[in-house]
Length: 295
Ligand SMILES: O=C(O)CCC(=O)C(=O)O
Image (spheres, rainbow, N blue to C red):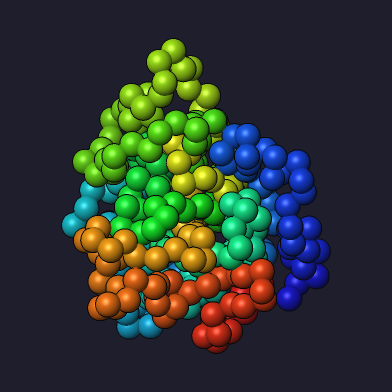
């Protein structure tokens, strides 16, 4: 481990009480740097090109590949969901104990497990991701909630289309899932504007951080990202959607993709597919210790 990285990561063992208060007030928390070591940043950036070319280290395809070179327009934000099944370096980061522990602190959870990762690549000229609430897509789970960690592998600027949040919007009701306006909508803020209580002025906050910085957000916080109009930054982000450790499958509601991991006659989440990242008892899914140490 690099000494400098170790120092910085140590500062993130836990959030300070005022950071937890800021999360409780705003529905998100921005962390300027230190969620990922410099060495890990280099290793992670190198994985994007092969992953999006369909070269899978483990031989297993991610659950969702939403952009394929040659098939999809160049101006779309490139997205893979559950890249961790395909790549062990991505797995080492999105399944990190630190992410689970910090997320549990903000969510006031006893422990956390992963629902899903997102590998996001947004070169110059790519379009927006429509504003949405993550928990809207979780009605196949009980409770239908999550908390998300978004990490930037680059220095972000507001014009490079980083994730952006509507401050305080986690207090608004949960809206139905929006699937048609998710990738490349012209008016990416429209869903949040439509959901806002009458007379609300949207306070939109872009996440401007150093490489390895990022943010955590509540599952009901409205968020998305503007187009990347910065000619110099092909920004990459890595997302872990975390669940409270005790979440179970819903008896009847199903998800087109993720309900395939539900065992017959058993509503519990299998740790082969939804491993526990951190638990206050000290438990962590044992197979995670076989992942490479990228710090
Ligand atoms: O990085 C982005 O453009 C959006 C990410 C996002 O929607 C999420 O992390 O839930």
